[in-house]
Length: 377
Image 1 (cartoon, one colour):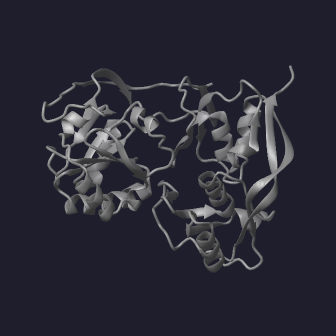
Image 2: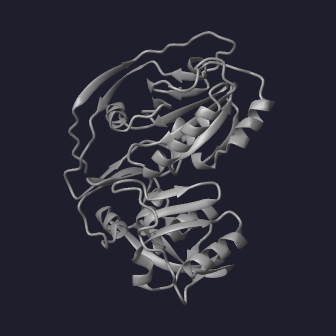
Image 3: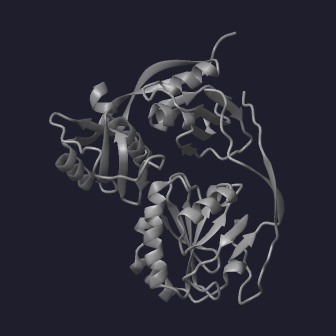
């Protein structure tokens, strides 16, 4: 069970709506930390919500790209960087690493969940009426895309009319640090998407049990079958330091008094053959310690200090099919940097073979399926 001791702060958030051409209140936020120092908040055709976090290294790189776009389109286009973190932490971060974009807080993750944000950085481009025009990783948003929509869109609205600041009195906590090696708490959130915080103090996972086990074991979601009634949502903390080679998925399942049975199935998947590996070392990409390990865009996967097993799990997630890798522990668990295309299979094949010595085939494969059930009393 989780022992939670929080230092409380009271934050009164006051709604402020300006009446202009439109008053939609299309996107809910908790508060603005700062407005843009580049763009005008009035009469914009397009709004881009940049989903980010202070611990996400690729988000900082993405923010630089968005800063360039905001300077290129200071009129009719407005970028808001939205974090679900404690505003106190965001403010501290901005003091260390200031930027000129607007920054806001989605403390209850309402907007994150509404747009199924699963991987950071992510972003959504809206018109003035709140219609989603484009969604994807911020680095994939191009100037040509913005220019095209600016030509097409006619309606305009202001920043304060487009974003609805929720009128609440919210108790905000300081960062919780787990006291036990493993802490598990059921949560009532119905959103099954996985949220991960991985820093120097702890690994925190929030989401469905299937998504949590899949992340820990690096197993594609459809390779995990849960007994009816088990796939509810949890918040799980693993206190650091822990053994990097420890089977955290098995540790969690054991702590929850669950059993696991391995079976096999056949279906379409990706098979990796690696006879002459030429993997990158870990010096090709450096996002710093404690930052996110992945940058997954519309067509490209980049990763910093990640194993073959881990990057294969991410690939299975975006392709929505199993990825089968060789049964070689050293090959699978050694850390490398990665940068390859995944959207078009032939391009992915070329990238993987030319840069890493991986031969990828799409075919019917046999893959493991893990059945998790309650142990008999």
